[in-house]
Amino acid sequence: MIRIGLGRDLHRLVQGRRFLLGGVEIAADRGELGHSDGDVLTHAVIDALLGAAGLGDIGEFFPPSQPAWKDADSLKLLEFTFAQVKQAGWNLVNLDCVVVCDKPKILPYREDIRASLGAVLETAPDAVFVKGKTNEGLGPLGDGSAVEALAVCLLEKNEDSPKTKDSPKKG
Ligand SMILES: [Zn+2]
Image 1 (cartoon, rainbow, N blue to C red):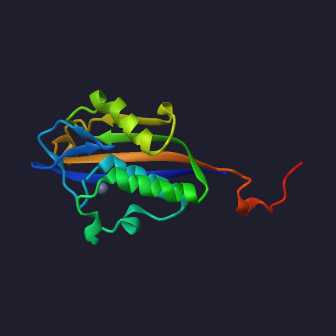
Image 2 (tube, rainbow, N blue to C red):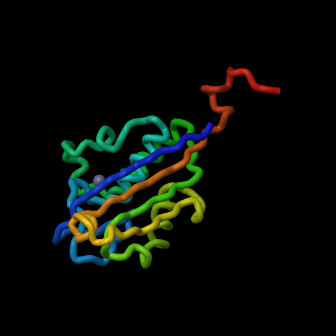
Image 3 (tube, helix red, strand yellow):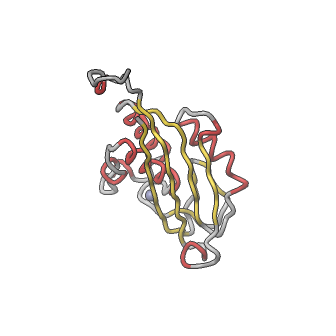
């Protein structure tokens, strides 16, 4: 069985915060505002994984109302999320992401971001991809006051897992 998942997130960019994408710090004069460390890409990836596995969403798993998640390392949240996904019997086939902001440019950081996410998701380097897109100067994404991330993932489950063991097999 295979399942697809979609995640999307947006954070305001403000001075005095770090700009993190997939756990990699980007050189910028602004960073993501957020209860956690604000890593917009990692949050989108978490939602894609949870959605594909049908387990919930990031707000349920890591409520902003909980002090435990204040300034939390989003890669740790991803690690916890992926453990739940694996526990439910799923393996990650691939992950593809888009980060939308006019500045800074994502390309110089792309390979570091792929490696960072790939390490947590225990996957081959080519199974994680990240693209930067500009917003053509339009709106808050175009003027540097926000950053958006989108992520899509494919999960697969071994058909021989206990839940499907008793179902009749063809042939
Ligand atoms: Zn977020």
